[in-house]
Length: 623
Image (tube, rainbow, N blue to C red; front, side):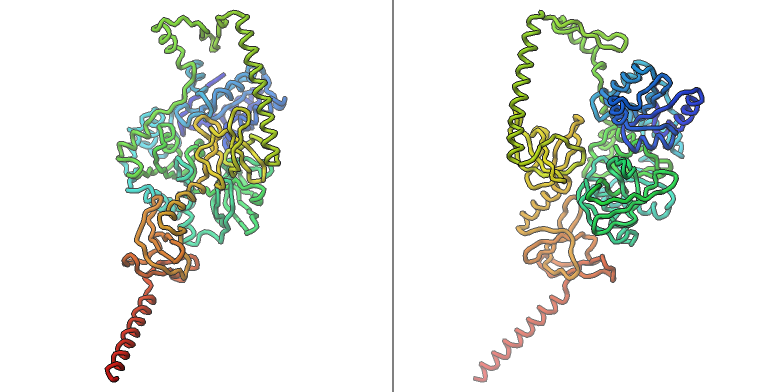
């Protein structure tokens, strides 16, 4: 076994390419394993190592396929993101086959989704080679800053970027995102041959950044006529020239989770064609959203999706969820430059942001606590009544449990009987639930899947939420893994902190809740945007979800219009008349203005009324 710890941007992939050539020239076969499909593709393309995901490798081994041999070297890339269970299974397979294992990663970058920090634990106990010469960044002070991030010195690194005017502060998160999108668009226009990416911690922020960029692209006629589709992350409009990500591996389409492409066409029937440039020669991937809908806009991405990515320019949106590991990854993706954006409604000061982004969030291993556990036991006179743990040769040895054999058998027997009875009760209740709904019910959920809540059922000793999937299938999940879900709302399956799936309202559902609450405040249905020809009364300004809107009251609804769509010098008191017109003959652009025709009509009616009153008065005098 060999372990390599490489800082971000030290050229790990190039090193592996050289190592592969040396190994193959010595008669070895080199195979790769990574956490994600796109990372496997990158390892194969960058280092020439035939690669698959760790999940795929484990499934193949369990089914007797592609078994390792003594002349095989297995390279595990980004090993720091693997949980203890997966690493244990890999080590066991390598040990049994007599192969060689090379694990490469950076424990300081994004932590494992599953439990434990196996790579760090193994590297600390077995030793490792370190790659600490930063090569990715062009500018020397940025190389030094990346090394500071790698060493956990986030405060010093952020100070360095702040000193170079690379940290930008705004009053609100909405304005920070807007200016970040503007900068992205300017650089995209001025440097069309350079790669760029906007990064955020939350998917909600990624969505808003994508919307900001698309709004500006459409305003500059840089996107074709689009259509709206129901995709895995909610409703999205896709247009020709749109940059998109694929979100799920698909062998038939030959795409990975993270593959980037550009939309060629997207018709009303849901037929989409995308130009994919993940190889030397570009290729076209075509599908219908009824069969595959795991795509989303790709101008911005989460920091987790970006680990392993290299771009010319990066733009980072700071938020409260950051820690030193996320900050390290986000601020080290670039070659030529990175800009960090933050807002005062998210952080009270630069120092506050600095402190939050410096937080340690390292995953722990059980073995980290062996010495402290012994010390705790010794201080309290605990003699290890139930079990003694001894660490020898990287193995945990458990002494025989200290109670007699008869007691152990009795306890074990009672436990088994109880479990059998629970299982019988569970199956009976499940059969009743399936009969009630007229369908088989499974627990087969996938991350990002959207479902609808039908109701709840007690099955066995647990309460389960029953869902209906997008394709009409019925599924259930323990209610203690469901967070604030409601009937008739879209519910999304997401990953919880414990690494397991949980059910939560989708982004669209949360948005609808906020809009419904707003509708209750106004006493009318609220909608966003307006159409040419809309008329109503002005109701002042409001701020909603970080954006400023002008309020237009109509007879049976309230329309919220982006303040950027109001005419310059718009000056109208609450209750004044306004309307929406076409802006400069642009087909899709609108502008909100004072309804002068309405005021002229009112003035005319008042004059006519006055003249009528004077005529009536003259008639009475003549009588």
